[in-house]
Image (cartoon, rainbow, N blue to C red; front, top):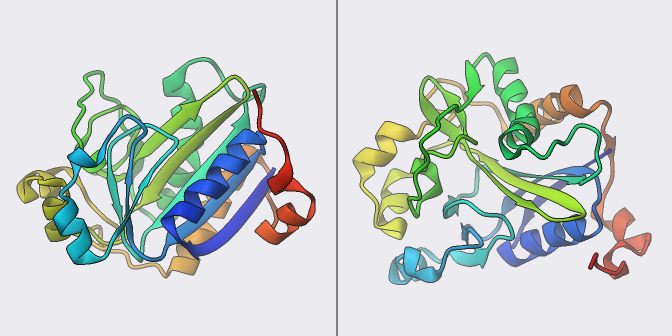
Length: 240
């Protein structure tokens, strides 16, 4: 299995790369950021779920994800992960909750290595808020009862793709305006590394995530996008 450390890319390019990885059923952990900052919407959402005037005011990109879940404001300091596994991977089951747990486990491991009491959310009653941060869906990584990382998944006949983020700093004012949300609700339900009293560098957090996913899947072999492209990866036909 590979790990791809991709830096900061545009919203459109980030989603293009994740779709290519999914279509090729490439077993991989991809870690990346967003430049410019962006709003990503779940595949069942529309732009009606956000305030487009506020989005333009902040100079944000808007992109639709191939995965589900609610909308996310991706700021410059967060880390986003995408994990792809072929559907026949021996660790995958047909149980959606179990697969979320498996693909989120690297984040839990990373946060625990940084001495945060991270755990997977266990909530039977789901909500469908437009804002991903405040949804209850049984797929979140929690610290002391508040969400620090969410997960959204896409499962096809050939592969599973899961997206998630690690929140470095909570951006209440912008989130509330973009999603027309209650700042008090965000404060009550969402935390961040900074609010939990730790301030790892981006490099340190990436190192912890790579180690966390290594604990889940075994050794991860580094690869670059250029190496994938040179192998003809981007020209590979999609699955039916």
